[in-house]
Length: 329
Ligand code: BTN
Image (tube, rainbow, N blue to C red):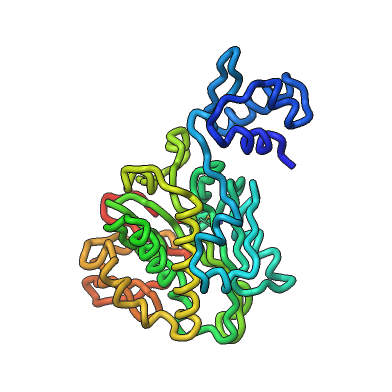
């Protein structure tokens, strides 16, 4: 158990708590309380210390709550999720499920975390995961027979996230191949699909979703590309439990359709949401840059780029895409 997280949970209400009261609740002395306050500050969590009043968070936190989440989910989602675990901290929610998958995981097993210390992004990048502010969510899904368009699973998940954002009152969210969710040119969310097993026949997928909900300002320096969070895009506060419930509703619905019908039912919607279609793009692949015009995607989710020699297809994997004059994403 991480003591500074115990402290954070008590302070989550945003009210003042005296050092004495905190010490009594945690079974430690006041100087130990102060040590944990400093540890939190080092993690970028802003705490006000006022003599005579005690400590309080600069802004209250809404922690994830299983009961609240389950009540907020649509009944079919609730039925499709046999296990929903919430960790205060873990290395990576994807990693957690992948490790468990060895012993067999039920479809719909969800792992959420308040923070990740080794959050994973695409292509070996880190996913910055500060405590209690954003959403770090992974879901395991078993496919008895992987659809022929299995490689497009992440793209279908992107459509699900856009639908979830719309249901939360946020229009104008778009997709950037392969797995970026963007709002006004800035990254709002990312998707990381990791597979265990064969891509044909029975296999398991871990679908990880990271959504910027209310990124602390102090985190900016650690992020190397333009980003936005839901609070800024909506221009108002937003409930993390509500966001999580809607995301799971749409994610489960997409996975259920995808396992029966593959990517085809999502293809048209994806093309409409495509940020890059018809634009000049630069694709980085295996250490070289390919210049051309994006022609959208094919039924397997491959990116189509028109060059002087004709149109070529590029699969997800060790490729990254750059909009001309844009940062990698
Ligand atoms: C990207 O690079 O855009 C993908 C980011 C995916 C981040 C999520 S957060 C939950 C899950 N656990 C991880 O370690 N990564 C994914």
